[in-house]
Length: 245
Image (cartoon, rainbow, N blue to C red; front, side, top):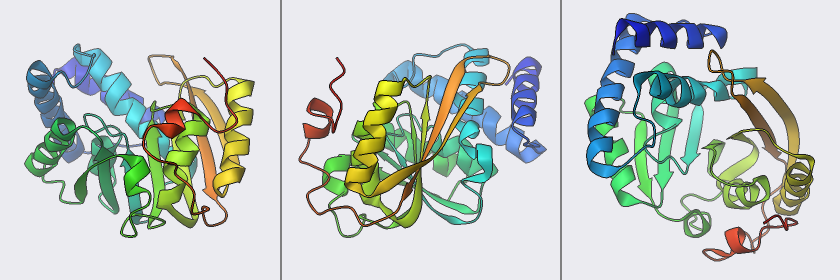
């Protein structure tokens, strides 16, 4: 990582109230190398310039720490982790979290596993599969304290896919761009249907980059009905209470 990249990372983290150590910076620098090399072979990310990766992958991933919703130790599922975001940046700064990085694409999960191992992030566990299937697995269902997602799907889709994984009293932290009133209302109704309630909608701008972001926080208030999640593909084709095209 160049001195400019380190300065951007330090400044972006500082805007989030985070003070990064030399060890943190070293791991982020190694993550940048792994991502750049891996992306050349596996097409992991559309971002290729250091500034974009630092701000729109690393710093953006850390924005789910806003508001203290991830405070305290716990078991956290990163659903739709892709190339490891937000799981890997979170693992670097929060060694107290037990992070499970889930994606349906094995090559991405394999990359996350290799990268976590190379960075000595032993509290990151890989998991390959579809959320609709794993959400019904007794070993996974209602077994997480938090679920984090980053730009995965519309809110009503997200709540059906994620809330089955949460224990009652746990939280979904959905990292999104700007969210309109129609999607928000559909997400609210879908959350109630599958056992949750919206607790916070944190609208902000990404440090330094200035891009509009939203962090939607949903509490799991009751057990998810057994009929959810629906079978593979249905939540995306027929989102609960959502008819957007």
